[in-house]
Amino acid sequence: MIEQDSLVEYGARRVIITITAIFCALLEIVDTTIVNVALSDMKGNLGATLPEIGWVITAYAIGNVIIVPMTSWLSQQFGRRNYFATSIIIFTVFSFLCGNATNIWELVAFRFLQGIGGGALLVTSQTIITESYPIAKRGMAQAIYGLGVIIGPTLGPPLGGYIVTNYNWPYIFYINIPIGIIATLLTLQFVRSPKFGEKRKASEIDWLGIGLLAITVGSLQFVLERGQEDDWFESTHILLLTITAALGLFFFLWRELTCEHPIVNLRVLKNGNLRIGTIMSFILGFGLYGSTFIIPLYTQTILGWTALQAGEILIPSALTTAFMMPIIGRLLSKGVKQQYLVAIGLVIFFVYSFWGYKILTPDTGREAFYWMLIVRGMGLGLLFIPITTLALSTLKGQEIGEGASFTGMMRQLGGSFGIAVITTFMAHQGAVHRSNLVSHLDVNNYEVQQTITGFQKTFESKGMTFDQAREAAYQALNGRVEKQAAVLSYMDVFFYLGLLFLICVPFILFVRKRKGKVKIDMSEAMH
Image (cartoon, rainbow, N blue to C red; front, top):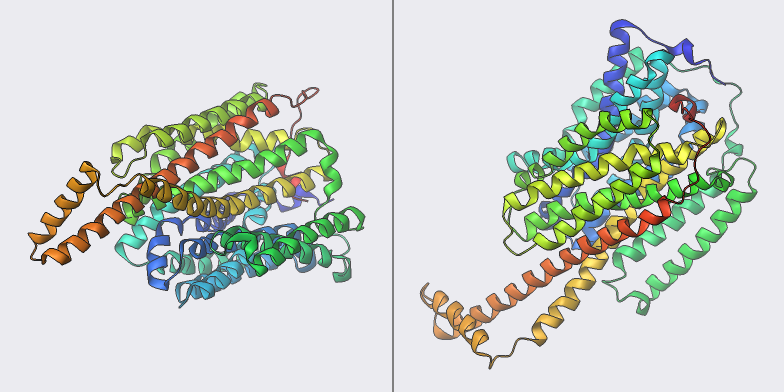
């Protein structure tokens, strides 16, 4: 066990370390969602399809998920300061390369490697902040850190929107470079490494488990992203990758249950609260990153907003979540049960999703989103900390660290899978709705004829010949059908996302009660 107080800092040194760690954590979190509002620009600039452009986000998340379980061992092997500084450098270098990518798969590869560097920033930043404060002030330290973690995903889109509107999409990556350089220098100068015990040999790390995890997640992601486009199991490579993912999962579970030093300790899932908390973390990641993905996409592709406008619309949600944080902390400190707060948060998130389902049209006004997104911010505020606290509430000692790592990994996986599932689902539903709409279009119908005639006259007034105007009129009608089908697919996403959260309410209420108050020292969870 590490002597925590040996790393306590005071005065300006602690301020510098805190700012450095928070900036690094925010770099990692914001970069998860900052690309959302730039997807349309990337798609056009790189000649990518919608499922392909989704990989820009999921590749980063996969890199995070793979490296997070290794963070503790790497910190012990190379020293926390050296590992943290190296991770910042990797993150910064690949941020530069992302901005210079010339095609979609080059960008995806660089995003994956950027995620490898970024994965360590979040976990290690929390540890550094926690150990820099005396025990009496660690609650404040966690509040400072937690606020950034929670509002970070929502701050990404408005920042990305501002950059894309005023500059160009590569600058959402270039902005990381000066911050990364300054953070690296400050880390090497001020951050200290704890004195770990005997270093674990490289042969003791669960390399096979890491490989199986990467194969399973990577294969499943590819199936989810490309399945719709490649006609699912009619495609040989989709079928092979599905089998690979299934076998990879089986052997990964077997490996982790039999390995002496597993990369993911599955035995800790015997704890009922942790099992529920892990599932809820996955669903939370699904809803958080999924909703942060589709709102900018809808406002840009359907409503024709700029990237800046699409990003700014999420600011009220972020501010509401920030406002909720001290209220949630006060409620938890007074003994309000976490499962009750989570249940209320799930219901509120359902209200937000159903609200979105009701207001979406091909020309929804900006004001219609305001209160809906305020409700989203309230729901997220009620979910994030209570779910984490609930998951760890009945764990002790080393189990806390294993549980915290597990819930964090599952939240990231949930976001990764959520975006993959949503893009695939939208492509499928868009085709279904288009087919249904076309089946109701009868060229002999009076209203259809009037619409075509109206389009035709408009095009003739612009100088087109009769035949050109007639052809353009049919194309305009087809465009209207495509747009309406897309809106209906967005509505479906909101509806089913809300339904998923509502279904979870009764399950969360069955969580067994804790005996007494359990105080969780998050510094212990990091070791």
